[in-house]
Image (cartoon, rainbow, N blue to C red; front, side, top):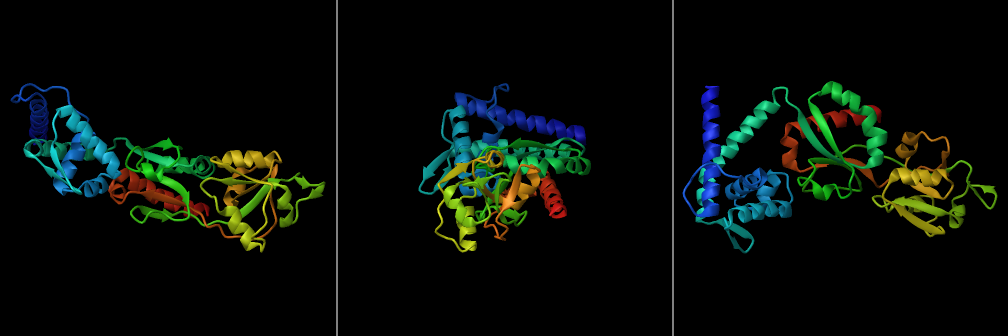
Length: 326
């Protein structure tokens, strides 16, 4: 039974590749030739079946522009269009109908074969977008537990910016720092936090210890680009909404903010967990006031991605790990 299934899979793949070749060259099916990107064929099948780029993009956990690029790449490979472009719609032409009939079964069997292998001890890979400071302070210390719980699950870590925009196009899931998340995405809040004013324990203003918020008028404030409102929320909460520092310097690295503060260059407005995780004896919290942060860390992915085994396993483990360390 298994051998027969494998023979049928090879036959379907051969038929699909032969049709691609004939479409590209304008001849009948011959021997198997160079194949286009499988991701382009997968995108074509998804659009053909759903009748919508948007619906297909959601199914494949891609952005609509990313899916359109894959379709265009396939059409360039073949050398002719597979769809008629109409207002807000794509309609398959004759070549598209022909290609779908012969390639779709092969794609389905390839998907089944890969999922079968993945479920029997093969390595599962998750492409995760995450901010560097969260990765070093909170994720990495927990990874031995992840490996022990799910030894087949491996992470490709991406610390580049704009992770939410790249979901489905380079990364499968992300841990982001945000006020809220696009409702079209799946999102799970991982924590709630307070805003801390963090400075070097040796920092003084005019030779005086830093004890009063009014002294910030003579200092530089550091803010993270993903948390631009932390200082505004903090000064409003302490009853000084109009106080202005000498300068407000923006960083895209939380670790560099902590380093700058430790050097006595200014005051960093960050989360309490950032100070705790830094474990830096040079740093201290100044102005002992409680201010709830408008920002939280979130786990985010496209809804369809949560149905895949690597994303689901990591999501469930992460939620439990963050609750245990809260």
